[in-house]
Image (cartoon, rainbow, N blue to C red):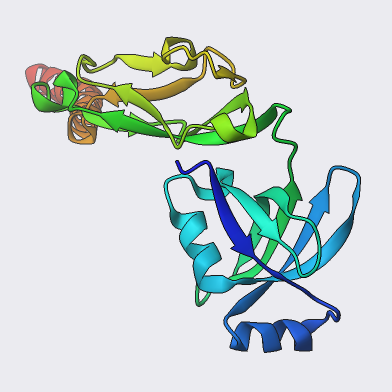
Length: 220
């Protein structure tokens, strides 16, 4: 990812629902900048630009150089944000200041590479169990994603956190036994096995009844 992006913002002097509505009509989203022992600052950000960043591969892990009106530049990351559930636009963003010289804990998305042999030759399904992994690293060394080669996975095989590639720049925090991705048997086969088992149980339940009828016929 691009290590740092310049991002100009404006300081908000007023708050409230009416002010937030006015800002959104201007193409801006209300936000708050906080952290590192400094006083929180109410700001507004360009909605489209911030939305593109959050939807990019780097996402919320992107380091932004926040340029405040008449104030010093602050390195920050998106710690939290709210989205309108009906229309999907940003409602508010929490920006957290970061010290570029100190390690932080972040969640990084998982990206798979290749087609598993269990999918290609055995009809299995690739299932990503953990779509993000927690790591510790310096703010400017956060990877855009952690890539896994799944080519050799057969049905029943799994990649756990302990199997992920090692790195000199970050350390995994997620428990090593956590499954990240595995190849499972197709659901159709599972359903067929379940149906076959049910049919077998029905047949077994019917046998005593047939035998009983046969016995009665012999006595007659």
